Image 1: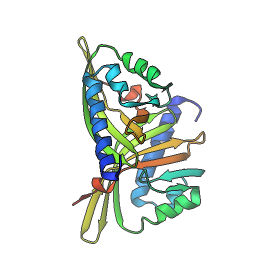
Image 2: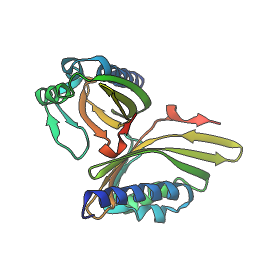
Image 3: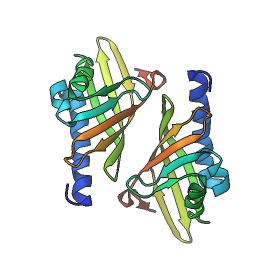
Image 4: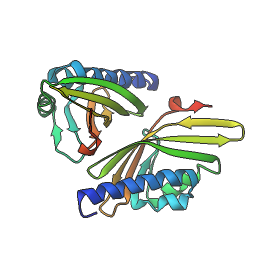
Length: 127
Length: 127
């Protein structure tokens, strides 16, 4: 990522790709966005998953529920991004919505070096 | 902050107080929310202000422009918070709006130990 404009664009594309993959991608697809030694803390205050194998396990555990995902707000600054997104999960007749705020730190290759997700059970709405 | 519910409530109150003080408070008022050795990086990628004296200087530099400030979204998780807010600044006939996403880390006494603000010039709207 040689200059600031390219960096902002690359980060923006990666965040949009992440949102797309949360809805429709596999754990293998998602983990491709991460650096080898990346960390994921989702939610913040919970377990920190370190490295691609642990991160793949975390996303695989989300399982086969039907998901829709939409980016609400994105702020890119320096080598980082903060974004709010809306995740709708449908399991049988039950539907729930949550809008976490995630923060990602990017490395020099544009891979996600660290992700932290800010949400709690209080933020989940049943539809 | 003895338990999780009290911690969430204390963090929520501090964020709301911060938003109120951004609009109507002095640098001295705002710095009271911070721990002695706190850090402020606003925007992310810019200078990191370390310690209360540097932080007071940062907020004092905002100056005497007329400000309105409103909390848009708040997510509390663990000992941290992420929140989006809307800041409207009026200088003479010029009015501009920006909606940063801030992240705060809180210490055991409920003081802000670290603040990072995610926004860039691209996010500023002229009204």
